[in-house]
Length: 399
Image (cartoon, rainbow, N blue to C red; front, side, top):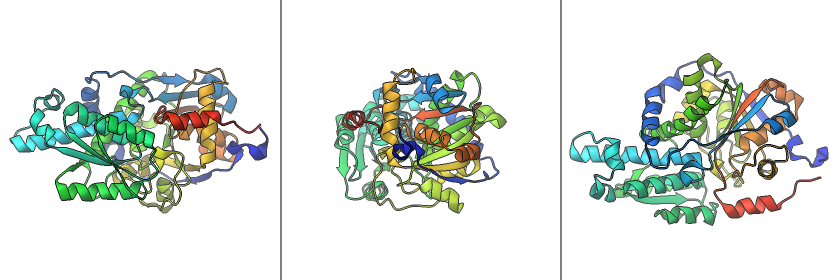
């Protein structure tokens, strides 16, 4: 591949910060939150740990000692890590509301066992989504017997909308972007007495986002149990920050001072965490053009997630969309001799950034990457839209 035609040779924007001191990784979402989610989710029918795939061939090609990819594609048959968050948060919302109605604490198991069928059927849970969170919420509502209403923005693919409808959700497509869909979901929920189950937090709204992040901790615990030694680096997708904050907090709680260096990766078209790092405070950005990384197309950071990331993340990178198709094909075609991995567009953001970083001596030095590095990647989704995946696979990388 000629240097001028190689998208990985493009320079990446990088902001490096000194992480703020504090205990947000213990305070915002604590060990008890993660433990409660683990106990509940691992009791669900169909639970199984997802693969932590070693990629030694690719590691050798890009010049690191080890590369592990947590493949969330098989998670509960829903195709992404979001299956752990939205559905668990839905269960917790239902338990809180029915506890209020009955005047006693209702255990989660009673909701899961459908012992409050009529009460659940009268409750409507709503959220905005780029696809995967809504699919998880719809699945949880069907499992627990609640009504589900999902708001999607104009650029969400019809394939992802159809997947939510197939799970029983009412899907409302709006004009505008993800952040506009979040606002409309909030407004209509408040007007109708519905319950928002969001993966992003705002002032006065923290319980469901904390529950969502607690659900993600199941994935992190599986990773820590499978890794023989701590990674030196973890590359984490941005979005509103919930995934990154949950993983960073879980790794800190498990590894302590040996926790890996946290590198946040975002699309250059939706870089709210990057701008937050640059400004030292939560910063919203206007999305002028949608990114191919649909799950990361978020303009406003979660305030709760930012509390953790400002203390745990040291590096923030943005990547162009041009890196995504060749990275998807690289994993699927297993040209390095590693197992084939079928990944969605948002899943490969961390790997794309890592490859590009290793092609730049200056950026590798800035990130502390070298031949001894052991890198953890979160493959956040599998093929959640087969049509998009097929179109990517039909493309060819420049020679």
